[in-house]
Amino acid sequence: MSDVRHVLVLPDRDTAEEVAGELPDRFGVAEEPQLVRDALAGEDDAEDAQWLVVVEDPAGRLDSSALDAFAAEYEGWLEAL
Image (tube, rainbow, N blue to C red; front, side, top):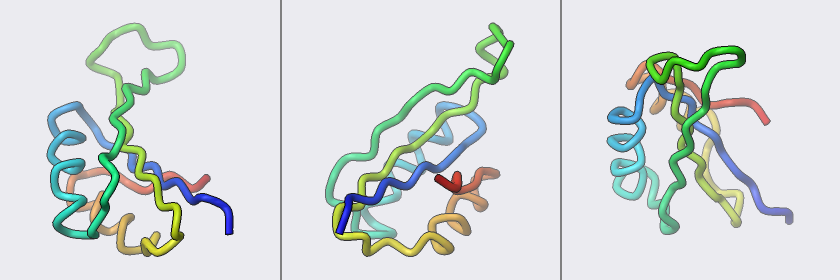
């Protein structure tokens, strides 16, 4: 089975950090999620940046719909890869 990666898209850094901190408790994520700033195309203003929380799921055991619902609690979503 190939490694699975989930990408949660969130509105700002503080929210992304909060979500990353909740993932181990909520979903048992062992590996620390990676936070990535994602500037919207054509935008230089940092206020327009979204933040991504990248979750490695080597066993493919995380439920995508549960992750999407979790991100939605923080006004975000699960990016379909």
